[in-house]
Length: 208
Image (tube, rainbow, N blue to C red; front, side, top):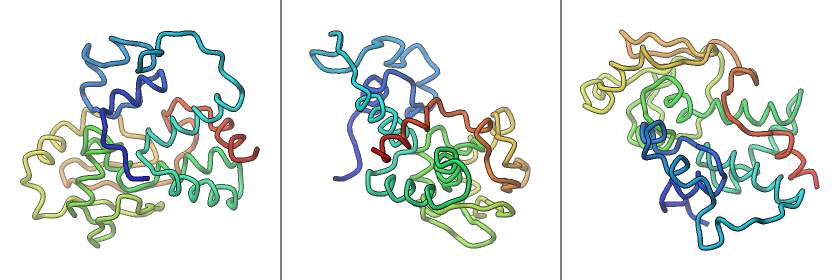
């Protein structure tokens, strides 16, 4: 199955929470979740009993949609998280957070993860002085992410860079706005990942 290209706000309404897929629109009164806080479709406002399986499925789908990942790719992340030391749920979130497109979003150089994915695909960034155009590239502590010199004057990147200093940047990333450079200083911890997902239910979904 290909990547979802329909209305992003429909995904938020389906999960019943803001997934922040539309950038600044998610913080405005135009947000679909604010206007219509019920699932889409003709039966969206009807009451429905939710089974334990459905609860786990919805948490998995919510997490997958937040990071914009396809099913097979998400399953691969889950398998990798299970093989790592520590708690599987936290390992999974840590792997997703360390995706290059997510890091670009976290440091304020894109208004959404989808926009960050496009910027990475178009080759606007380097990691450790090497051009990377793979959104799923996993950064590690010590890695430096830099805007390419040829991309610094791009209107979109320039405007985001100017406002980056006012954005909340996770403590596991250090950002030098003047240089347009960020460095991963540590692995992200659970309390540093502001994603409203019950990762234990996602683990239970794959453990059934």
